Structure formats: structure tokens, C-alpha cells
Length: 114
Length: 114
Image (tube, rainbow over all chains, first blue to last red; front, side, top):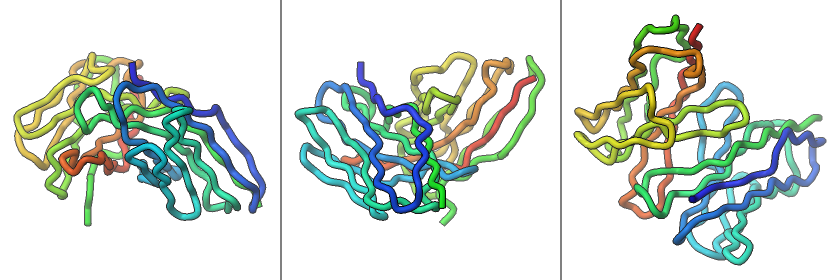
């Protein structure tokens, strides 16, 4: 079935460090891919998205490229800030089911220290 | 913009009690869904609805009922609460007809069953 695997956390970085959170997926068909972010005590917010192979999503200094050949959608940021501390979820839209269904990875908790 | 509103934010139930988690959206989205978030498990789909009068089961539907009498509201009912239902519940809405499923999430309901 369709699934998302992302790197286990927690991840602890110093301010201005480079961030990579790995995400790979298994899907039949051509899903859209997403990164959602959850700040402490809040719901999930869309961070970025990509709808087809080789698309790059970007927002707030974060980037991720839809790689069909490696079935990956890794999240990167060149210089993290304390305010980036949150839980990050990789997700795909279920191409075989209802268009609204999202399949999530388990989440990666990021802590950025000053 | 209210977006997606969930009530209550916190709830403690005794085993066997029933309750309804409320969810309302003001974006006129056809698609609504309920997820539960458990540590190390990511978000798992409980039930979803593609429009008023239409509901379907997700990955973990047992112990929960839903109905969709209006476009705006999508309540989740726990029929007889069990400790295994202790979780954080998120309601989401989206408009899949636009081709990319960007979901908007509520703030969540933290439920504890004792």
C-alpha cells in the first residue's frame, strides 16, 4: 500500500546549522507530496508542496524536491533558527483513494538551540 | 478567517462514556476528515467525508462514528470511550477538486480516557 517513511527524531541542531530531514514514499500512481509543520500546542500547517516529478516546493527558507527516481522528498534548510523548532511531517495525497486523503509519516521533532 | 474550528480543546472522559468532538469550517470545503495523532505514529485517518451526506472509513475507524449533515460541520462521536482512544484528534478540510490536496487543520482536541 501507499506509505511514507521519514527519518526518526529527535533532531537537535545549533542555530544557523544546515537541516536535512529525509522522506521517502511508496505509492502507486502519481501522488502530490507535502511537508507540514506543527509548532508546540498547535495544529498542522502546510509548509510546502510539490505536485509532480522534479517540482521544487519552497517556503520560509525550506526546500524540498520531488524525486520520482528515488521516491524521495527530503526537506532542507540552509540555516535554521530557534523559531524553526517544531515537528515536521512528510505526507502524500493518496493517489488510489479519495483525493482528500493524506498519508503521513511519523513526524520528526526538530529542536534548535541558540 | 476562522478556518477550521475544533471544540473542545481538552477533554477527560471515563471509560464507557460517550462524547462528540465538534469540527466546523467556514471555507466551503467539500472534503473533511478526522485524524488521530499518537506518539511515534504520525497522524492516522479515522473517517472522512467528500461532501454533505457522504462519509467513509479511514485507517482506524473502530469505536468512532461520524455524520455530515451540512458542508460546514463534521462531528466525531465516541460511542463508548476506551483508554486506547486517548490521543490528540485533528479535524481537517480541503478542496480536492483543485487537483492538489492542501489540507487545513484545526487546533486539535486532546482527549484523555481514564
